[in-house]
Length: 525
Image 1 (cartoon, rainbow, N blue to C red):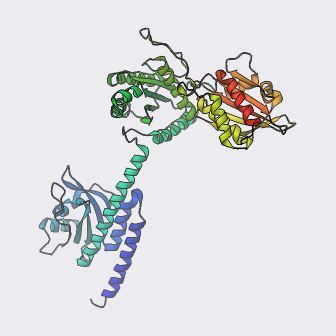
Image 2: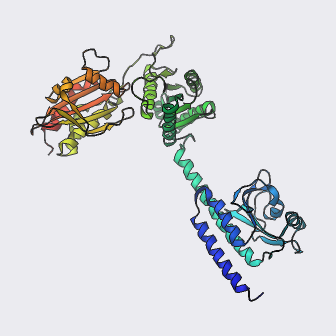
Image 3: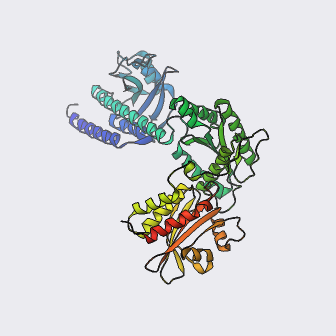
């Protein structure tokens, strides 16, 4: 017996080393399963089970078991429970943090454990608690079959190491789960956050394009939140947001194919996949009615249906921007019934609120004009001409709530106009830089490059057919273009594109033209 001991110890040392290495490398959802597999080998056991204490049922519930052959898997067999009763009281307090070794013949082994071993055909067992934050999280139970060497005190020490690693694995798993929840959950309301919403929206639009699946998107915005914050404080504002969140969750969160999210600030969204258009519209009406029950001024509600939007292929950005535009129409009209993108807005007969069709520049009255912002943006961009024009285009698009912008160059003596840079907001399809166009097919563009400017609307009967085709291609409603020749003989063009929710672009044609001329002709100091 003594002569065999060194070989046994070396085997045990290798097993312990392998176990610790496996436990250290394990991560994510597999950490506990891998720990059980490694523990079975290290303990020389034929079965190992990791169980979790259920404070409601007051029993140990097996989580992962390796009963060989094969790999560890989920288990619902409560067989181990009698062997683990020594570890916890009803409150989860640790009664025996040491664990024990039991065998069929040891007098100190409880009779119910001996009976269990006999029924299972085992000769011995080890049981140790898994303690997390001073409470029993669960326990590990391992057995060896009849006719094999029984577990000893050295095995018990190793089992405690296994339990310690399992405890660390539980903490790691709970931490990862918590991080994942935070990454996709809005902290204030507990709803999905914008990141989770955008991920789901991408998948929904893919399904729509591939299989024609109905996709409806409802966007809601709390009416009068600023007044609530100013009058009663931000805690009251948060309470208003929470009230609307509860309404949305109660009506929509548990519907199949539906995601409820807070996009940020006072804006919420309900994404519905697989429901018919009429059902989505009915849901929007119900949400708007319930919002009036919990909010003094209710919520502005707009929705877009993927199967109804005209123009080019649906993208997640186009769908969201269309729903947001419909919601904005509802807010500006002062109504609390949903507005459906692309459909005629019919005001309730009892609603005498004035209708405001459009946003104003930056949504507020400013002493600083758009042109002053454009000049400052060009100066801040430095001496590089392309950077100056991009700064002007981006500033104009942002200030006018536009869908996107292009900056293009016509080389000296040429007729090919090259797109040098572009910027997009939700709704405008991605465009590759370096695309070229023959300006002989775009007379309005040629005139702008010579130092002019123009506005083109989708409904303008006098607009160039080529320009209208461009708007239709990208699902846009209007554009501003302004250009200027450069001293080296080239010419530059800035285009700003608008859709349903932008400021009326034609009102700012002169400011864009002046901003482009200044960016091209006036060098930054």
